[in-house]
Image (tube, rainbow, N blue to C red):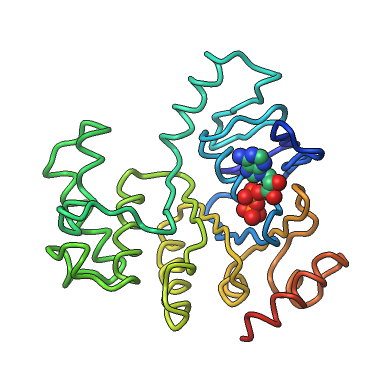
Length: 255
Ligand code: ADP
């Protein structure tokens, strides 16, 4: 398993109920998983906890053998050490891509391996070129972000995250900043990345996208209520809350 989240509890001060109420899921290495849930289900909080951007009180997050424990169960120093090690194994693709506007696609992808990992510029550029080509951007290596379409910018952002060789790549609502006609392209991109063997977790509202992945987890009130292949969870949901969620989405997100 590359990402194992176990009994995660995050209670925001002042709230009557915990945002994450014993959240558990595990993702085998190399799978492409969509994490779905209504607004307020706890998806962003989960993402921030996994990235080490927000504390949680109890439970564990195991990223490829690095275990981050809750604030009630570990010292600040232990947590900081584990979070640093975990971050080296994680990549995050932001909704808004966050590319450097003054750098080309190739430079955007080659920068962090040199600055953060101390790689040689030559090695970093070679890998950046390979990744951009793998994602179908061989003709846009020297383009600046403003010269790229939304879908192309997203692929540069994904290549940039992959250039750091993460074990787990997380996406925050990857279709939300794009034209609806691009949804198919996003899924194709995720499948191309799937071929690299990295474990991908996609936080999304997008049913169309979720139908195309290997594994789906449904979050509700801070726990996973159902998980499995989309053919099972999205077509024959076992849980009443999943059925209600799908019915509400289908009204807004007609396939
Ligand atoms: P989702 O991403 O599924 O929409 P979030 O993780 O953003 O859900 O939020 C879930 C709930 O957690 C919110 O409805 C809110 O009650 C609570 N929450 C999230 N962040 C905070 C915060 N910083 N302070 C207080 N409550 C928060």
